[in-house]
Length: 123
Image (cartoon, rainbow, N blue to C red; front, top):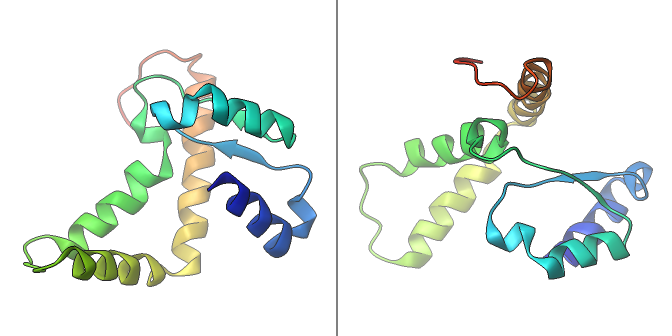
C-alpha cells in the first residue's frame, strides 16, 4: 500500500515527490517496525500522532462521519454493495470539502502544539 501511495504521489504531485510527510494514527499496522523501516528507506518523514487524539486525524473527524451518515439506516444485502456505496460516497466528496478538512487539520494541530500537548475541550 505504501509503495502505491509513493508512486501515486510521484505521478500526481511531482513537486512533493522528495519532500512529503506522512501523518497516520497509532494503529499497530502503522507503527509496525516494517512500516517504519520502509518509510525510512524511501526517505519519508512521519508526523507522529499523539496518543488518544482521534480528533487530530482527518479520517476520524471528517471522512468516517461522512460515510456513516450516508450509509446509516440502510440494508445493503452484500458486502460488495456496502463497498460500492462507501466508494461512491468517498468519490462524491467535493475537492473544496477535502481542502477544508486539510485546513481544519492544520488548525487542530496548531491548537494542540500551542497547548503544549495539554488537554483542552473543543476545536
